[in-house]
Image (cartoon, rainbow, N blue to C red):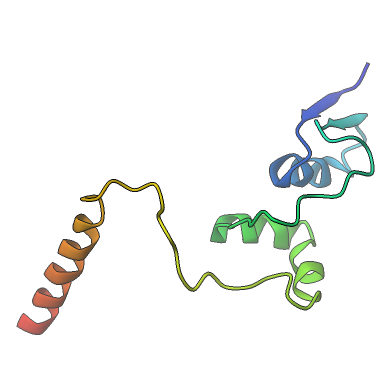
Length: 104
């Protein structure tokens, strides 16, 4: 019997396993991929600033940053499944902010 069973060895499960590594617990991480199966290279992963802070505390971020091309900024976002009118709100907010700043 294990003290902790982590279901899913993706970014969250992996981070939890790292965070608990020094806790003197018997930990097992389970994943649907077979052992040794490479991660899918065709998938992107976007991390929030909070996730970056967690990875920094775990010592993962500096090692990732040292790999050329491993970390890149998001420069554009394509919302491919958005409803046609869903982009009106951000434009209206931007216009209101612009008007407010020019009035000051």
